[in-house]
Image 1: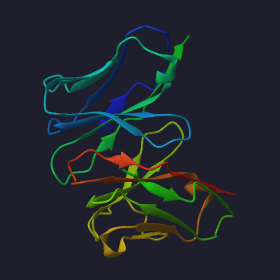
Image 2: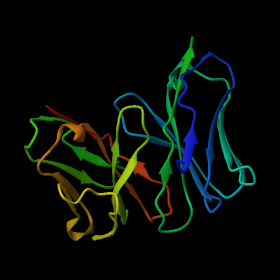
Image 3: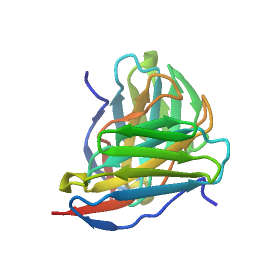
Image 4: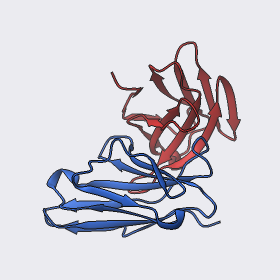
Length: 111
Length: 113
C-alpha cells in the first residue's frame, strides 16, 4: 500500500467552479502537509503548508486536514483557466522524516 | 530572492554514458533534496542533505548514482552508466530545515537513448 493515495484525474471543470482535490494516507504519524501546483515541464510550486489538523486559507485556496480520517483536501474557489495544472499533495511525520508525495491530480479549468 | 537553480534543463545521452546534474539551493537553506519524477507520478526522494551530510540516501541506487554537496551549498547528482530506465525529470529542492517548506527548482529532463 502506498503511503499517500491521490486520484490522478483528469478533472475538468468550468471557469468559476469550486474545485476539491483530495489525498488519503495510511500513516497516522503524518502531521506536516503540503500542496503543490505543477505546470507542464516546470518544477512543483508550493501553494499551502499546514501542520496538524484544521483549515488554512490563502486567497482562493483553502487547505483542510482531517487527521481522524487520514484525509486532506485542497479547495480552489472561483477557479481560473490559469489554475489548470497538476496538483500534488505531500506529507511527513516529523522533523527529519522525508516527505511522501501523491501521484498528482491533473486539473483543467475550461473558460 | 533567487529560487533553486538547476542545470542543465534538458539532457539527451546514449545509454552507458555518464551524466551529471547541478543544483544551487536558495541561499541559507541547510537542507537539500534530490528527487526523481517519472511521467504522471509524484516526486520520489533520492537523497537528502543536511548541510554537507547525506542523512537519507536509502533510495539512491548506489551502484550507478552518486551525489555530493561540497561546502554545504551546491550539489551534484551523477549517473554512471546511464540506463534507458533513468529517463525522467530530476528535481532539486531546498528548505531552511528538514521540516520546513520545500522549494523546487525547474528540474532537469533526462532522456537516455
